[in-house]
Length: 498
Image 1 (spheres, rainbow, N blue to C red):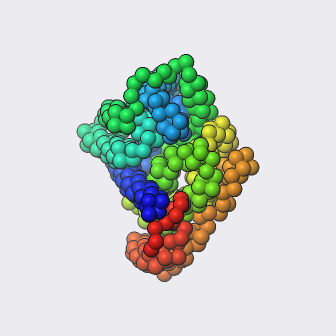
Image 2 (image 1 turned 180 degrees about the horizontal axis):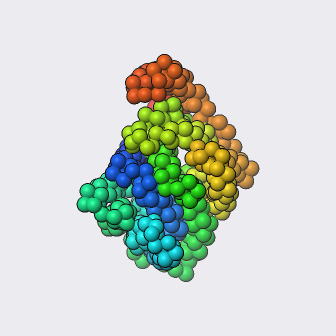
Image 3 (image 1 turned 45 degrees about the horizontal axis):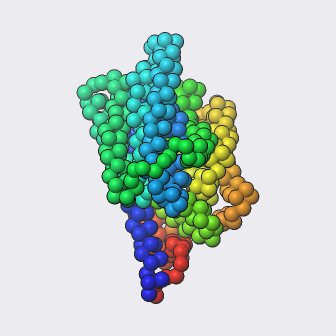
């Protein structure tokens, strides 16, 4: 009875953590979407484009500023908890401190670069907005690492409440207050960046309390062991990889702004935020499953890794695809929420939804690659896909406008997933399923895709068509739940009798 109950309790715990993570990711996505709505409604496409470009620069810089310490925490700490629990405390604080130092250096570099850009073009408000907010990069870098430490050691609730709910809510309120007070665009960007400092203070208190609760005491020697070199050895490539990940998310906004102007950047940036909001399931699964992947690979449990990947991919596709299908088919309705100036991005949004769907079929392959310790391969992959994205945007935008930028991003995302899958198969020699999410995708196409296309043909791309498509699709999706049930079962040992 005990042998049966233990895996069942583990599965239920994993399910609860997944639901909590999903709820947090959904809340974060909703708040991020509301932020875009507020920017669009108050500032219009051109000024909101400037704010989004400033945020893009800061997010790319943050990829360097955290110095890979957040990913290192997720990879290393679960292993230390198994093998050297006395080193967890010192390693955790070392990771947080390194991200603070790196963040300070990065903030200085961004500030100097923005100051030089402001001197070259004093009338451009973008450099001033970047410069005034760059000072908060160390706080944001330490915040992300602190949250990663807490998550790596098993605490999901604090990660969700601080990072997924508290921070985006504070940013939304701060930006709204800045615009109601009539602050400049620089003030709006500063209002977006400032809540990271308060969130960091809370996160540090949580980590300190967590260390005491887990019994990771003082006294273990850290410097002079192999741990600092091991930590920095993994983090080195991850610095490049993390920065390039942010570039893949945000560089299109900057390049579109440079090629087609701030108004085009505003429309493209708004469309891309819809896609980012739709990735809530991907974020939720990665938050919960990454430490588990790391522990399984450390123990050599290849079968469990394959089964967990199959389950995670099925969940990812089954609960993400309906959102992206509806967004793609009824893109004009979604963008109309932001204002009439943004409806021109409907085709852009549809193409990006297609790219996300294709990439999701591979599952969390990047997570498996990173938790196997292959941060160097991940960095090479990101360098390749960012180079492809940046190279394709100018000619594609010249030929097809911002829709071309969406195609460039889509191609880059597909290449990213394909590279990671090939490396897992042929370098790690781990036989993960090449189409683990295909069954779930077929279910979504039949239950949601077909009614959505039919509703658009009969009722048009308006709000009524969207409501009908969503209602019918939800009913059919629920009816198909029994078919998909086997794909949602968690791996791991014997099950209780039903």
